[in-house]
Length: 495
Image 1 (tube, one colour):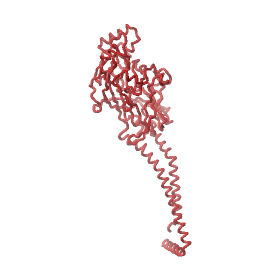
Image 2 (cartoon, one colour):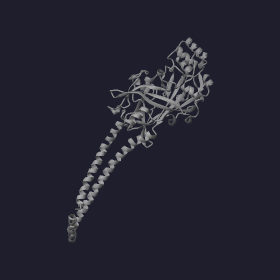
Image 3 (cartoon, one colour):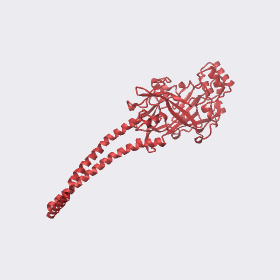
């Protein structure tokens, strides 16, 4: 027997209501399901093949671009004139990073050492590692400042030592040797008679201690008990805080190890991390939203207060003795050598610094520091960390190699470490953490719309049924037709 319009309408009404209810439930339950999947994927857990492999082996291609400040007028500087420098670079190195000695602990932490290797990329560089540049001689000018308050006789003896080994105020050598180390009879002498004075017992180079090395023993939280703590540092080399600085706040080890952060970020979030190379914790702040290869990101940048001195930003007083804002004095963790870290070209620094050297032109695009984060997962999608190494140089009485050098914080090199997610990793990340959540979000509205449409259809059928009944009451011939249709349907059923 054929179904009546009223029964079809009732069926459609029930189906529509159920579909709307299901879609409405998805509106509230869907985000919970998505967040639960994110939590499972971002915690440090060997069972999570994708995220754990990304964390352990870091498949993102990293590159370090190094720029040297070639000294144009070394002889004039020794006479007291303003230094003139020209930037040479980039000299680009691909960077391989991986974690080893991974050990999970019962308190939901994991310890590891992260190793790094550098490989020169000629095709991405302006020249070869054999290119020759002139930079300040850290062994001479750094030692001169360190000996400034020593007895005059000691300074004379130090100067005589420099002359014996034919070491001058400036050094002209190939890029490769300045980067990874060069043979020096002075270095051999110091390592023999003053062991521990230099950071390396082998060749002396600006990055000699970085290649084929690790960043120390990190212990971080896995997030398995509280996702808000994932990647946060519990200790570094067994320390809960360092002792390089003058205040407890400055010595604190805050944030993560600088590779990933806890998920579910907002514009009010910050990116705190501990940097062994800078010997301190740092914190980036939200700048703006953006999109990278179809993935929504938040850009975090260094605030102007990052390297501000204690006068301009009181909490930084613990990093002093300070000079102009824009310089971080790292001598306490660099064997007391008068070394300062800043942004490249003194970007975001006191303008006074720019007036002491010719050849600098800071701008945010080339010299700013930023990290683009996918806020839902805390995974960096695009990273550019740029820092400059500077040396305080000045005339020191008794050390004739310093000539009449005017006191100046001299830029030596700046380097940028950059990397971004691409290739199969990006595709998988985009599918699992962008496309699928969007599909689920759209599906909830599809179900609601479909349910409402079904309900409207059932209402239309009901109204149609009422019109048919009304027409039947007012039209005797219509009653006859309805009776005839009923008999025909009954006959068909019996057959």
